[in-house]
Image 1 (spheres, rainbow, N blue to C red):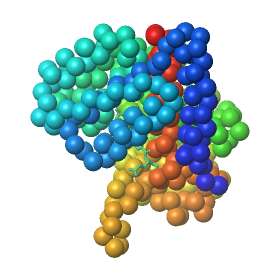
Image 2 (cartoon, rainbow, N blue to C red):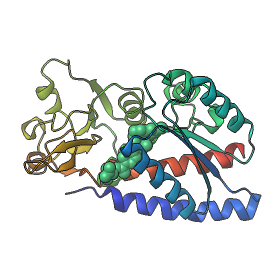
Image 3 (cartoon, rainbow, N blue to C red):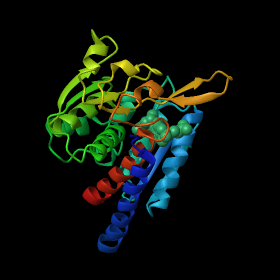
Length: 286
Ligand SMILES: Nc1nc2c(c(=O)[nH]1)N[C@@H](CN(C=O)c1ccc(C(=O)N[C@@H](CCC(=O)O)C(=O)O)cc1)CN2
C-alpha cells in the first residue's frame, strides 16, 4: 500500500480552512505567516512559493521577505526583531539552508518562540522533550507521525519504531513524537552497527539520513510501515534530474506493508503542518 501524502495534506488543509474561518468569525483574528528567504537556492524558492500560495489559499495572511545571498547576520537579526514585535505576524519562518556566512543557530534562537512555527527554537524543543503539550512541533516530524497513524488505524501503541537519523529538525523530534504515541523507539544513524539487522526489527521505519536509496529492500521487515523523509535530487540514466527518497522504493514497496513515496509522501505534509502550526500560534498567542 502506498501512503498518499498529497491526499493526506489536502485533507488536513481542508480541516484547517474551516478552523481559520472560525477564528476570524469568533475572535477577528486572521493568522499571518512571514517567510524569509535569503539567497536564490532554486529548491528553497519552490518551497517558499508553495508555502506562500498554500497559506493564502487557506485564507491566512502571508508575507514573503526575500533578501540577497550576501545579507549580513545583523541585518537578518534586525528583520526578525521587527517581526517579533509585529502583532499581525503570528508565524515567522526562516527558510533553510541559510548561506554559509550566517550562523543558523543564532538566527533560529532570535525568533520569538511563540511565533516559531518551524518549532526549531530551543524552548519549543524543550517543551516537546518534556511533553508539556504547548510546544510548536517541527513540521516534517508531525507529518511523519500523521502518515504512520493514517495507515495504522490511528494506533501506534507498542510498535517498534526505528528512526534512522539524529538531526534536530527530523530525527530527534520524530523519535520523541513516536515515543509519545507509546512506540518503543530506537534512534539509529549511519554509524550504527548492524543497521540492516536493526531495521529488520522495525514495525515502523523512518528514514531521515539524506542519502539516496540508503535503505535497501532487504532491510525491511515484511509488512512494516516505511516513512521516507529523504528528498534527494539525482541524475537518471538519461542525465535528467529526478527526486528520490532515502529508501530504495522499487525494492521496498515489494516488502513493506505500506510506504510513503517520494515525491508525494512526507514533503506535502511538511507544508500542511506549517499551516497547522501557524493557526495554532495565532489561536494561542494572537
Ligand atoms: N525553515 C525550514 N527550512 C526547511 C524545511 C523546514 O521544514 N523548515 N524543510 C526542508 C524543505 N521543505 C520545507 O521548507 C520542504 C521540502 C519538500 C517539500 C515537498 O513538498 N516536496 C515535494 C517535492 C517537491 C519538488 O519537486 O522538489 C514532495 O516530496 O512531494 C515541501 C517542503 C528544508 N528546509
